[in-house]
Image (cartoon, rainbow over all chains, first blue to last red; front, side):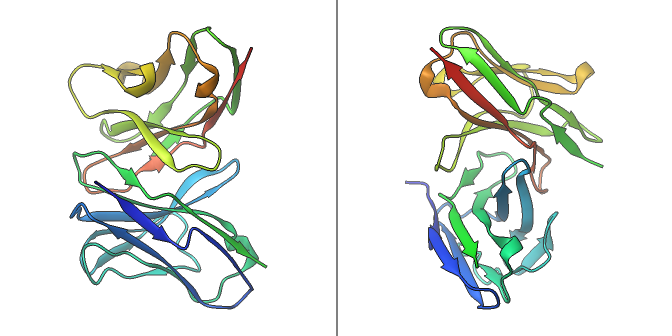
Length: 111
Length: 112
């Protein structure tokens, strides 16, 4: 079954405590992306990766890092989280002419 | 700059009535176009997509969308809305090898 998995699904943390949200896909897609969703703002892209070791900034990259060491994984790293990063995060994957698959989402609260 | 606009933030439709959600895009060339639905507490589910060809696209759950190049629009329609259609709907656009750009969403409420 085609799948994008994210962990954790829910996370409450405190300001400044580094965290990583993992994303993994089993479809061998080259393209992966991270979005954040906030009320009234829709989905905004944080970072994307077109292939292994290739990453680029999206619309709202400040405060985030990513890495793409292998095709199936695309972790999102918050080195020093702040309350304005409280959001719902989605990982997604697709090929240029294929259906885009979204993960189930990670709800992050930064106190 | 590339953008996707959903002019309606919130729409209420009576159950059984028809529905049209609007989406306009601004791109240098015709992008790929998508409609997604998100139920409360859920992830995004793809309803339909347009890449090329027939401008009327059929999707899941009885939805369809029509691509109109002259109006830079990709409106979503359903002839008869069910209470279970209440959700948030997102239009998105993108081109090969680039990120998707999403509209801000339209919340659909269904009244009985």
